[in-house]
Amino acid sequence: MSTTSSRAPARHAGPPLSTRAKRWLYLIHRWAGIVLCLFFAMWFISGVVMMYVGYPKLTPHERLTHLAPLDAATLAVTPGQALAAAGASDAIGLSLAATRAGAPVYLVPGAPRKPPKVVDAATGALLPPADASVAKASALAWFGGQYAARHQETVDEDVYTHSGSLDVHRPLHRVDMDDPARTRLYVSSATGAVVLDATRNERAWNYAGAWIHWLYPLRGNVLDRWWHDVVVWLSVAGVLVALTGTVVGILRWRFSRPYATGSRSPYRERMMRWHHISGLLFAAITITWIFSGLMSMNPWKLFTSTAAPLAHSAYAGPAAETPLASPRELIAALPAAPRELTWTRAAGQDVALARSSVGAPRVLSATAATPTAFAEADLRESAARLLPDAAIREVQVLHDYDFYYYARDAHAMLGHVEKPLPMWRVVYDNPQATWVYLDPATSQIVGRQDRSNRVSRWLFAFLHSWDWTGLLSRRPVWDVLLIVLSLGGAALSLTGVVIGWRRLGKKLKG
Image (cartoon, rainbow, N blue to C red; front, top):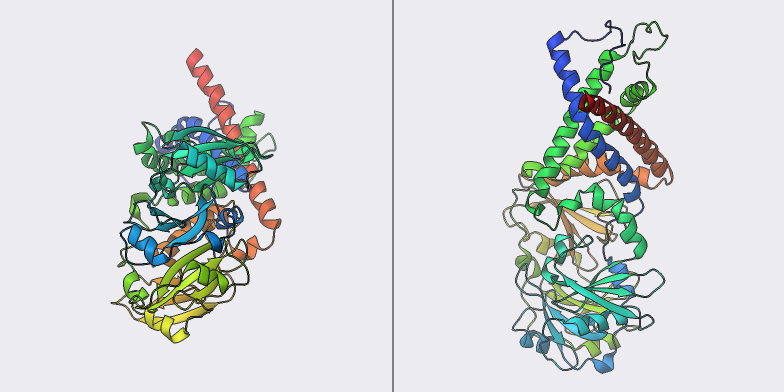
């Protein structure tokens, strides 16, 4: 990538282009590059930060670690009573944990995009939204009362809470802790549960990482409605500028014989020469990363699936006529008290998933309060009802991660999504080539992929993060490769910034 120079020889090697076409090519790259090279440099540098510090999130492991084990003696309310108090009838998605001010509560799922209702597990009372005192008590319980907590304010959205998954919990109580990491906790006003944690280091590094990389300065203010379009069209312009720079760089490079100076680049000024050479060396990765960043935004809904939604009710089957066992009975069937109980159903079999801080959940019959397992034939039959108009072509049993099903580090963008093994990949024979990932141990549907999602996986995740399992399993090879390429791209961008700044200064003075 390069621009023209008054001292450069007129002769060049390369494909023939008209003088007018080359002039426009140089002008577009020169002036658009002045602005866009700033964004390129920012994206390359912040991308390196994001390799090690992600946007704040609360992972399942973090959440369970900070919850106290359930005390059977305090659990006087049965699941049926909790459902009745909340005006609900189906236990699917019901959960029980000590998430509100350190006390155990039932969370009863509501309508889509609505917060769950909260029922006190000791009294059966339907609890109101959480105020500042409840939020502070939840924050204190998060660290077992070891550290002081300061309720700062209630916010709808701030620098660290742009995630759409927090929408049902807004407004959020912001509580700062006096622990060594100076953790900031965000507590749901709907449930009183901690829904996000961010240490001081995470908050500081995010200004040099995800916050600036994703152009989050445009979020949460009057520009929020245009954020998506700004990122998309800025990325489109970035791809075009990188492509024009690549063409210019190739046109100005002497492949057959060097210039009179002995160099194959015509530029004698050091910054111009380094921009030219680094552009040729790192043009491909620059174009690849800007393009794949564009793909991450699902521009023009390219990757939006047209497949029918999954029939979750048909998969679950009818509820059991037998009353659900009490939490005390479920806990008595376990070797140790769990930190959370979650109720679900598949193939007409109601189960309770008992989760501790580590390991896979234990599966209990939700009615008999005994360890249980799903029959393979029953799960296959239920999975066939997920897409009524499509037949199951095959069920692949994954014992190891592969290109489409894999786990990432906790700080990565999707690092909070649990990816247990073994896993069923249920392949359907429909036009969208749907795959459903089903955990045979718990009956939980972990994910879904259609052909459009798999294309997105290639064009975004693979090209942008290089998250091929064969490479991710060979750390630090992955780290070294991405850092070297990022530094090369940053060098290309920063030299372009210097050149553009100098040229713009001359124009303004003239």
